[in-house]
Length: 359
Image 1: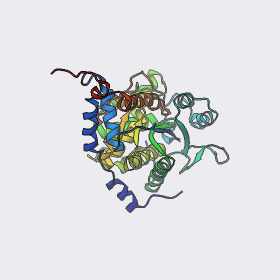
Image 2 (image 1 turned 135 degrees about the horizontal axis):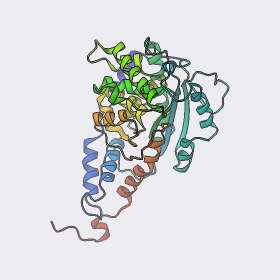
Image 3 (image 1 turned 135 degrees about the vertical axis):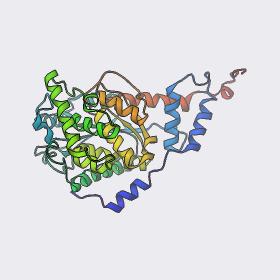
Image 4 (image 1 turned 60 degrees about the horizontal axis):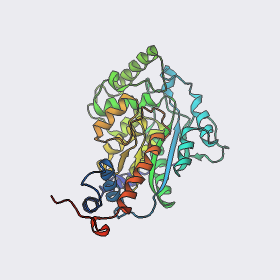
């Protein structure tokens, strides 16, 4: 496994341009000519204008879509922060490949190409077909007692995401969803949320996969202790240092993919809590990433709402989900496509011979 050279990473970060303001104005002007009252399509108009600004074209052809599910394990599961054993990460990867998970159903239904990436599963999956093999390590270390990763591991995991974004572009993808699988990763996301937003562990921590009240209280204390251990004396830690100390291999890979996908001007649909934590780190590294992100949904995790508000992202859906896997992001994709179909296929007042508003 190779790391991304520092100079190449810096070049990627510097080359992320914001979506086109001129194309955004063109889109807004076109939306106002369509046969409807001004602004009557609500957020669909905002979404269409954002996608036109990202793609820098009046989009007429269907967008090829993909979802990437990054899988990795976490050493912090040793602290009893999850209702499920660590082995479930491995088992769910096999379930994805057997087409048995929720994301499989949704990806098939909505014509989204699914890729499952082993970036850090604590199991030998080398002989498993159809899996994208990019393992950096067999999980992270226990972040309660030491940094989760080495600098080299962070760089290698980021490189995985950057490489797969380039692959997505090469295969003609225009819209990607970012998902994950990793028992224990809501603990990482909660700690990251505390550091990024300044929220307390009590506010930023949720029940994850569904733990008991006693286990939840224990998880809150673990998150508090993790943040205290690594960042008590650091007011504004660098995002890569946050990843190294309290992140996960899949979170680092998602961060890399988001950075590179923004550089390539893809529409990036983020999923739930973990995906949004990666997005927050990507924005901290390269602020221009923000304009390429669409929040697929708002999950039940309280920290997810905090992150969305901190990043000023309005979720497309709110369905009380807390599954992960990219499921909420893929569910949102038909709405994004609907926004673009309305933009490109509706008649204008002029073409339809319909009178516009008198004032």
